Image (cartoon, rainbow, N blue to C red; front, side, top):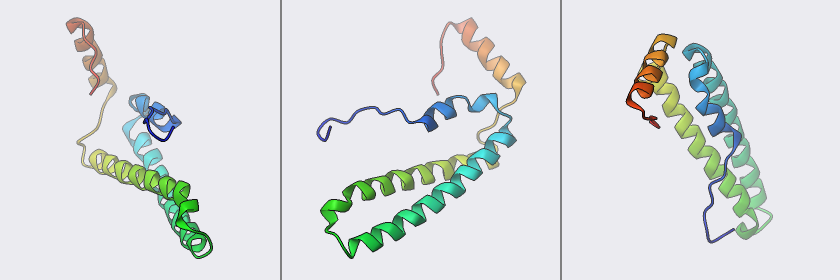
Length: 113
């Protein structure tokens, strides 16, 4: 477990796969709510790690440090996604999705980007 990274599949990436099923404004609102919660979680991690570091050696805080790093990375990514959606760099309509789907079928390919 320590030496070989594994692909882990938390729920959030699965939810992102279904983002086009939501209205862009609804999706943006939900992502903004997630961003707020992530900021709160990160602040709580900082408080807990600071408090614990006064009582226990860092060796016993590594799991908490890792969880803080993962939360910080997700916060950064979600923040960038929100910025892209607000600037209309990422958006969609039912008509656009239908055109993309029709284009994929006619070309016989599946797009992963």
